[in-house]
Image (cartoon, rainbow, N blue to C red):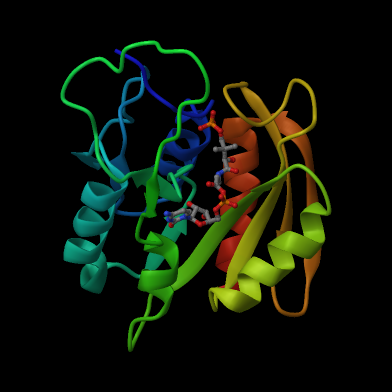
Length: 192
Ligand code: PMT
């Protein structure tokens, strides 16, 4: 009856899957529910929770050379999901949340991980937080996404990214998500 969500449409992730396929990769796309058609000739695994996404990713990860984490996965889930509508009452409503698994961190922590490209959706100090995530999660590359910019990012057809590695930082200016995905994957190929 009520839910808590975010603005992610899946457009960026699907554009990356399409671009990777066009560039010759065998692509497995693990996706939450979205309103867009999947690219042709890829393997699509549909999930509806962070835990399901974690399990699907970990099940397949040994067969993958590259892992790209673009999904806006919830960091927390409700500790108890009510089976009936929560009725309105006066005063505050308190909900308890428990932590979801960090899928990207789990992939990168494996004994022989694939090349990992994470995203960092931030609204302030974007590059600083992205670089911290790159180091903390032990990633090969991170795409810093300033989601405070109007007309870009969440649910838009366009986006802009700053791609950061241990020794490098490259800005990819605003473009369609597909054009941006191609540029992002070219950068990835140069680091892979
Ligand atoms: O879907 P669109 O409408 O096209 O929007 C695209 C986008 C804005 C969602 C995308 O470009 C983007 O920025 N994705 C990352 C969103 C996010 O959750 O960022 P984060 O900084 O909270 O997470 C850091 C990284 O950890 C991400 O790679 C994320 O996929 C991963 N993560 C996060 C939480 C979790 N439980 N498990 C994870 O693996």
